[in-house]
Image (cartoon, rainbow, N blue to C red; front, side, top):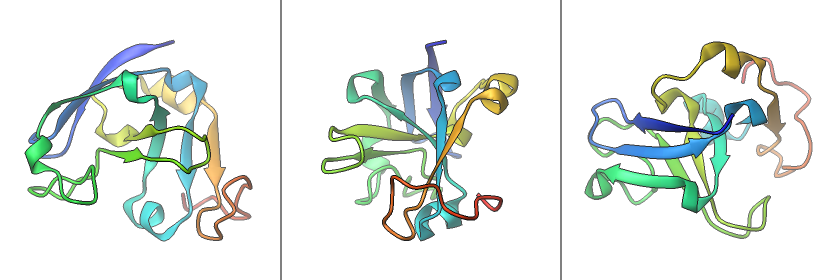
Length: 127
């Protein structure tokens, strides 16, 4: 079900809102950045994302708070897997997520480590 979620970094300097249907699925990638951050994400279209506060607190690598270091979102430009820009939202940074809905939603795994985004990595237990 499509819902409006609010979210933030740890210190609250970065705040955002997004419309998202968690039951439609989430994603996990095995590239070194996503693996080290334990990033569990969901994609949203640019029109479904609003930065509420903290634009000046973002680092050059968009989406990382320069105060607390948390990575609540990232704007993904083209070219990419979808062919259009989107925001990758960190599920862990959303407020009031229904855990039952999250656990029953499908998870797509991406083999970013081998630049083979269309394939599921052979090992996903650590993601």
